[in-house]
Image 1 (cartoon, rainbow, N blue to C red):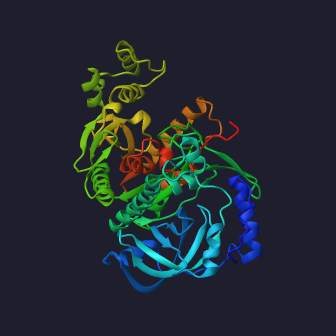
Image 2 (tube, one colour):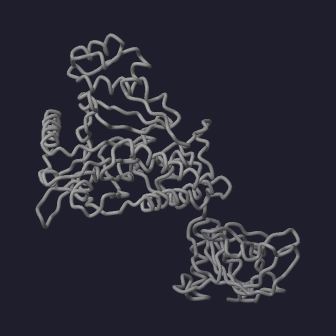
Length: 498
């Protein structure tokens, strides 16, 4: 390329300017999107290596870096380029930069990706800088970037064009880096605790393990309707039956054809685990250790801010039976109520609009959700759930209407759900049949009994504690994110036309 680049004739439209520059670049340098370019250091590695370099000092060291141009000053004399690890300043001047490289400067726009080879120095103002000797165009960007300091003002555009959100929003970039660390941290914690990670199917011929509306698809070759996984529970329990391991876990993607909200996305991440010869008390302790470990990893403390609240993940968490929590909040003593009719009458007398056929346990759970759930700001384990709504948990000794189940709440959100797992095959079959009949009564005619799971339980599953953690909500808390769409890279959304 020569100094007589034809910039004077370029269009005034920003996108058209870039297209015209691309055409000129193709004519003058050939390959504008080269397949090969090797840098010697990332920007973060460069900053670390020369951290002690004094101001107004030149090293003589020649390095090669690469990144996207985020700012350009004095006709390209000074540019800031960013890679995933950080930024570095580039200085181009006739005293240090070759004619061919300087001729490229008018063709470089904000958003282009370039490679730079040059000498490392620190300016008088203390800015680590590379005196460019060679500049290579690696990718010509055909669209202008959003304004760097304000990013995308349209919230929906942030989710629709996540690449631009991260490109222009350091908070968003940090949030997804933290998400990666949290998921990796969960995996390391579970492995260090002796759990073995497995992978179970995402396509199920019979869906189960949770109560949720599935997404349906069809396998052409097998001529079989199938469902995207709503939970991995039944497969993980079959793994426990097999004796492969006494402690099994999976970090899994689940799909539920339900509503979208600030806390719900139809595709979401869970960590589910099963621990042979443990019970729900052991699982409570595991949750507390896991949560505190993750908080320390991200914040260096078990205490952190979420909005205007200060959350503490320091164990032990508060533990409260559901009937006690409801009695404290409303005065209704469900343990003193004997029948479904009495439970409905007591609920309605207290002003709660329960369903006309609601059971004792459904009334208890409904009032808990209405009056108690929203008050659980600091982490707490709510225990002793009604058996009516807990088909896979063991009964509480002496109180057959309740089961050894807990849910962990924080910021009024459910973060985890755990049981002392039911392993009596006859009781398991009876409960699943009852659950199936209820589903059919609700119109869920596609719901079937999972005979393969029941066959495995007949073979004998050891007593175990089981747990499912909503990873996305946990990440929301740890990253101070008010919406689940802020921590899912590409959340579900309506089409642009809508």
